[in-house]
Amino acid sequence: MRKDENEIAEEEAIGTENIPEENLNAENEEERKYREYAEKRAKEEYMRRYNRTPLVLALVGFLCSAFFGIGLPVALVAFFISVSRVKKNKSRPLVWAATVSFAAVVLSLVYIAAVAAVYVF
Image (cartoon, rainbow, N blue to C red; front, top):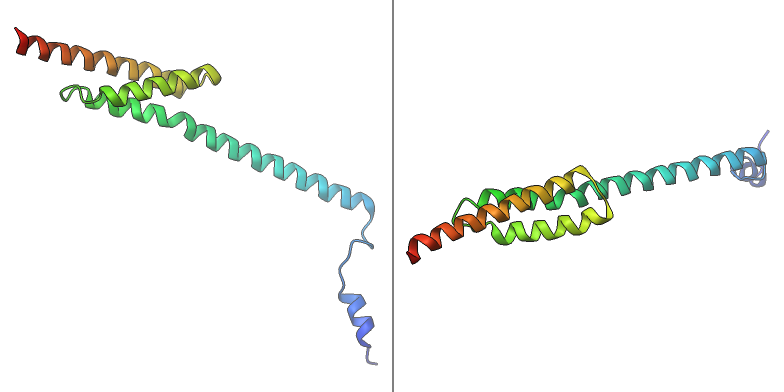
């Protein structure tokens, strides 16, 4: 016995009219929870990268401050970025970035002052 095209199309059609309403709500609830979870993870990843940049700049500034004080501009940028971000979000990387960049600025200024004192006097 051969089925006509309408019967085949009806069997192949997947629609929501045969699915109970509670299953639809459960699927929507699962999708909503997954979307919220994905948004939360994306925000956490963004904040991790957002908090890491000043720390990297501070470390580069600290390392370069021993070489003729050339780390001063980088350390100043890292210091101002980290201080402005610490006011919004007090995280450990930002506090460390502020501390390391402050130490790099002081070290650079001491080195520049010592070199200037040698050449002036």
